Length: 81
Picture 1 (cartoon, helix red, strand yellow):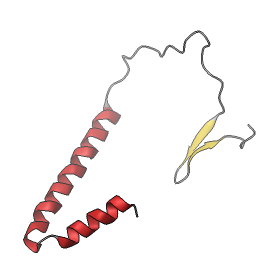
Picture 2 (cartoon, one colour; picture 1 turned 180 degrees about the horizontal axis):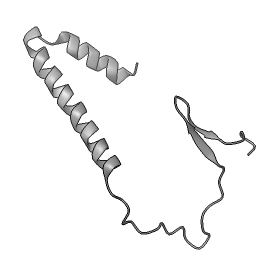
Picture 3 (spheres, rainbow, N blue to C red; picture 1 turned 90 degrees about the horizontal axis):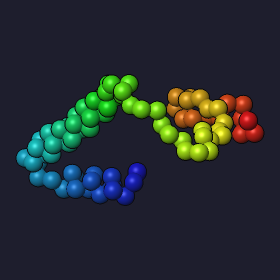
Picture 4 (cartoon, one colour; picture 1 turned 120 degrees about the vertical axis):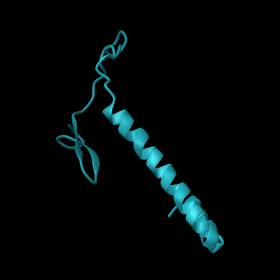
């Protein structure tokens, strides 16, 4: 656990009992706002954007990748691909 999260846990543990509900509601609000903003971005219609200008050298060389849940991006064919 990060030091910041450990500090948050310490602060929450030190709260007077009558204040814990207010803190819980605030944290739920922060999380719901973050989730709403993520959803808005994911659902946005970005079809009207112009194509990206790569400059005079064009599209850079790269290696093909695929997304593997729980792992992240994996180079297709291994590191030497």
